Structure formats: structure tokens, C-alpha cells
Length: 85
Image (tube, rainbow, N blue to C red; front, side):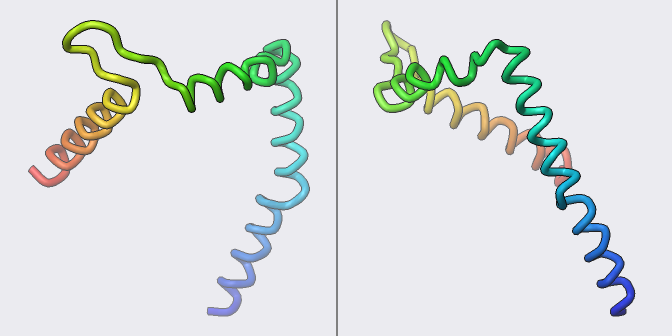
């Protein structure tokens, strides 16, 4: 059993080691340059919408959190219905 654990440790160290760190850093820099630093430019707006939020207008409108809860509930319902009959 120890040879399985040692093999998994070697594989884990390789997968999550410096190679993966360099790959993730490289992809992040590539996407940041390719998107012209859009994620960094939009941070103030994102925090403003996160804390202040958008106010729904009109009757029958729900906010962002409400729509997320309804969508997540429907996804859970569909998955449980599919797997558990």
C-alpha cells in the first residue's frame, strides 16, 4: 500500500509543482494581455455592482441574487430528478 501512496505523492508533486505554477502564470499573463487588461480595468465596477447591486425596476422583476437562487435550485432539481428518478 505504501508504494501506491508514494506513487500518488510523486504524481501529485509533479502535477501541482513548479510546472503547473508556471503554466497557470503563463496562461494568466497571456489572457490578461489578450484581453487588454480588461479584468483589471473592470475591478472598480465589479466591486461597485457587488456591494451596491442593481435595483430591479418594475413589477415582477427579481434581483441578481434571486435569479441565481432560482437557477441553482432548478439545476439541483434537474440533477436529482435525473439520477434518483
